[in-house]
Image (cartoon, rainbow, N blue to C red; front, side, top):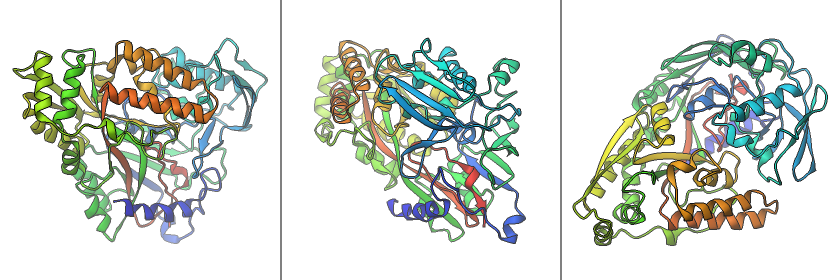
Length: 516
């Protein structure tokens, strides 16, 4: 399906650069009759807290409500957004000039004090976004007037600016947060182009244009509705029938048919997301490296991927996706050839010659992952491993995985900063909230030490060399099995203009979209 990426180029040219004008806005009389953009997403957001997350769906919604200090343009470069400029005083200190005249949805102006409050709140409340700011030394940070804030890290940290582009570090109003007691369903107050009208869990999120939005002329469409449709076939039907203007995540089973539909523009691109089998090493028997290696040897991942995904996306070749800075150039030697006899021998040595049972979970909204589970189930049965698939809604699946409530999860990781460090942090005890779930022992500690060194290394070549070694360690210890590199897509009605995809998230800037 790589050929479908040509649609992206056309739409990107229409949209213009992200930080630029964002499109013409359209002038046709037909467009004037439509004042609502309807978008289908594959799971319920679960939260409107900008600093917390349970799956990708919140990003698609929350990017419209909240904004960050910096964003990436179409070339992947970090450019000013709520911060109009920044400078490095030294390797530890960033000074931001905050854009004047930006208002929150409650009418209050964004100030430097709100910026520092937002960053500190993400850490203090132990949110998902805490990892983006856990290297900031807040005792040395300083609000220097209404529109200047100094951010100081606890040492050199090459990724800090990129971390602040993550939507999990969006700006919130200190006043609104305090008055609502931190209830983001009651008061999701951001600076974004849209503001909340209503949220019906499991059904829809209704937004309306922010009339005081700081970017003149945006958003182009007054009303925005997100509809939640978890079933993949039903999403495809919505796209083909014109029931929605934009449908995210057309499944591999439906993508060729939808692409061939003359009434639909299917746009796609290679993303920075890798799907993988995540082994919970805090549980027996996966704490035994021999069992994990046996699973590697018993699986025929290329065949399972062909069954589940067809030619959509790309076979997993490492935990870091192609195109991401710091990706290992060739991990092929670490992917073993299928060897059922050796797998049985390892299980026998580990004390499981009589067989064992393992649970595997994935989202019930992801047909490809469910199909992969069933293919893997048949393959592992050949060596005496009974794999029991369990399909959960996206929020329960993510929470169960992060809390270590299963043996194996099909999980996904996105290089949100555009470089390998953000992905590799997930496997390091003491660095990320996920580390304790999936890797323990002296090898994990050595990995964490090396990664910590990489993260404070400013020289990119030296840092990437350490990232390469980290990726080798993950494979040598059978920590996770990369199975697939995601291809992002969306189905658009023909009158939808100004939409373009981004590789770092399944979240996009909808203020540029117009009908024409």
